[in-house]
Length: 350
Image (cartoon, helix red, strand yellow):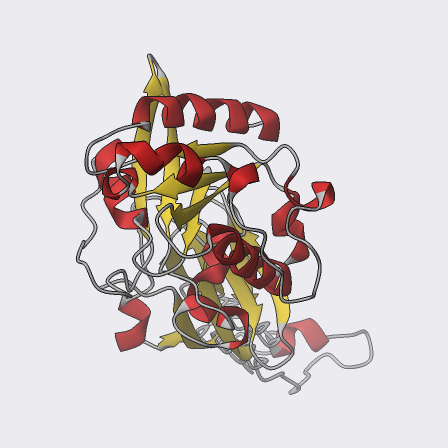
């Protein structure tokens, strides 16, 4: 099961208290103070681990506690510090303070880490309070409380290319044809209920990662359908591929809805290199394909904000390619297109 959000109640360790003690040895009847300091409490650390892919484990383990520091002892023995606790999350996880909604860290690379709760300082023993006028102090300090907070974890998949389309537009089928990923495929909407990642070979020694997110419908950015929960997964992608059925009633209108939802979620998404893929070409009779597959000859639609979708500022230079994942028509050209778009985005495929 895929889980891309989790909430953790984290508490760092409390510091140990200082000790009140005096040196007592044969031949030293008036030994001075020798109470040791308490140990520091353990920290709670969140780190990115490339072996993880989901936040599901934290649904069952929402509380994290670090070790407390030991109390100081006589003979100037300091207490041991409490054990730190390391919480391992998938790369791409954003750590947010739930109360203030402040981003504490964006853990993109494996090994990135952040201390989300610091342990309390250990208290001082009475040896620390000795002065020239106070040779036998009995003062001591209690250990400080460790920090406590609720943190929210949000996983945003790290992929080079994101597939965007309405439900049942053919995203999962395409991913299964160009990669080794095996997402669930069926002929009904919302078959995909969780994002899927696939590694696509673009040529000799070249590859990229492609993310298939659940289908978007109008109003997805406001919570309709499944889009509100998964739109964030395309925020890290460098290239977007819009998938629209080429035999639909108004492909331009469908493209307009997709772009409108992306704009409502994050306007920056529309600035990324992108292309329009007209899918399910095998369902169109050969005699009608020319009409269906030329973007400029498709019926003019109106965007939700009233502007013309054929305005050059909207779609000029948007590459368009008709494909069929079933018959594999156009897939070779698609790989070449993906390579060019990644180059335009400044991400040379590895």
